[in-house]
Length: 141
Image 1: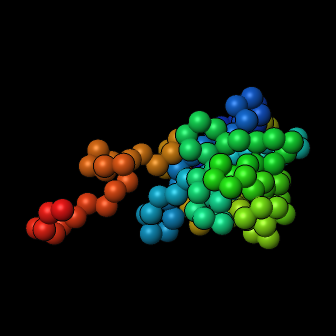
Image 2: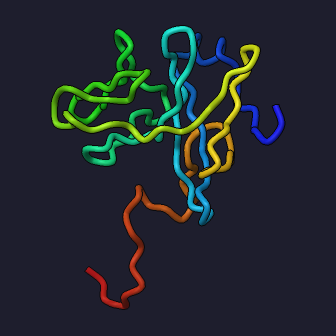
């Protein structure tokens, strides 16, 4: 498929339950996305609950039950196919979609707003200390 980046296969997503990957926006900023099974197909969503910016897949696969993605923070569930939530803290919100196309069991990233960076999540830099912001102040606490 021209003008598209091959991600993985439908079989891989179906067997694993989800597939995490990193994309970059037009400014080069990274974001995570997940592929999830949807009926006989797959859908892709930004890996973030719209309620509180909680990652849905923290690197061990997204929790999915009965066709719904479960937010690990508050338990809100999102329809895997539509991305909508009708319960819990995230009720009335929708996951941010990422455009993908399936052709002969192969999944391609076709979203023009992002580019594929790599399989897996955003890697924490070695300078990060448990996501605590560093300080440039000379004052110690």
